[in-house]
Amino acid sequence: MSGEAPLQSADGLHTPAYLSWRKLQLSRAKLKASSKTSALLSGFAMVAMVEVQLNPPESTKVPPSMLVAFTVCTTLLVAVHMLALMISTCILPNIEAVGNLHSIALVHESPHERLHWYIEIAWAFSTLLGLILFLVEIAILCWVKFYDLSVTAAWSACVVLIPVMIVFLAFAIHFYMSLANHKYEVTVTGIKELEALNARMNNLTLLDQEQVV
Image 1 (cartoon, rainbow, N blue to C red):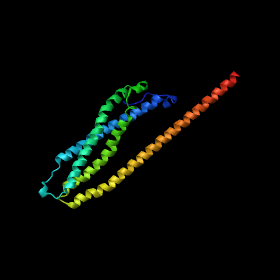
Image 2: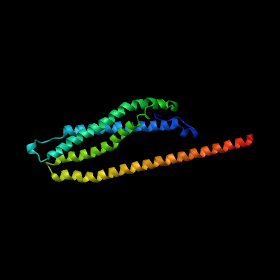
Image 3: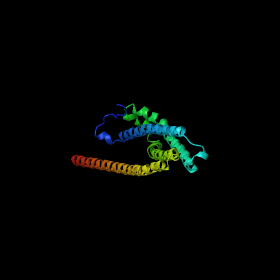
């Protein structure tokens, strides 16, 4: 299977090469998700901007500030997702080339460690900042589209999206904290295992010295 790590013994699961291999797989998954999400949402934003029907200034009730907000939000949305897509497109092939070889010995040839921050930026832009801008875009688009027909309809979009935004941010914060706690627990467990292994090795060394004496 693509991306499957070679089988390792229990002792080999804590080697630097295997840990780097796991980071490679995580980086590859993040870049794939970022590229798909960014391509989809930026395409939607472009279609929304092209297809929206705007009335002339003298025959519309839409505030000019709302049109400015729509333009700025759409531009930021497309720019953020295009940046995430560019990073993913540039880095992913180099990681895929090493990951598809299924050899931990070659993991050092992958640039995922050196380009770690670029991968995290692409992931954050695509899944956090990009999605927030997408929700704001929906609210502004509903305002621009329906304000002339019904002010209540325009306001209803904002009323609905406010709790959605709160839930979205709450989930993002909770997910980040849970992930940080999980990584901390895994790190502590690994340190304890290394300490236990070191203690066993010291005991074996003392036994060997006693036997020699």
